[in-house]
Image (cartoon, rainbow, N blue to C red):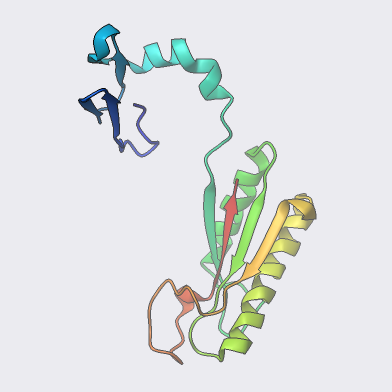
Length: 172
């Protein structure tokens, strides 16, 4: 059982016949012995690296998500706090071997459904154009607009909120 990058550990239930064993500690292993007995043991990060290093190194990077916020009623003007995020995104793209990106635009709840659908797609397309200029092939970028359907901050309809005016970029 390997821990996630943030240190959290999931769990696995190992079953053999009518026996079960929960594996939920970092670097725990389980083997089913002859007769169906489940043997749980602990290992170390060094042992995992020695035994599975090649397999672990061959894994693609974990998806990474970035959020860029926009000014009110704009598909092209970024909110000032998004400049740092753009720099982080550029740095991540420079290290990604073969990125595939999903770019999803969102709006706040201030406009009509039709208007917000159009604006959210325009925001996604603005970011996609930036990514193409940064060297990402257009065929590796998927865009979508979600309008006001998935607010980050829930407000009443018609209420503007800058946190909801965003584009979420996921690199895979």
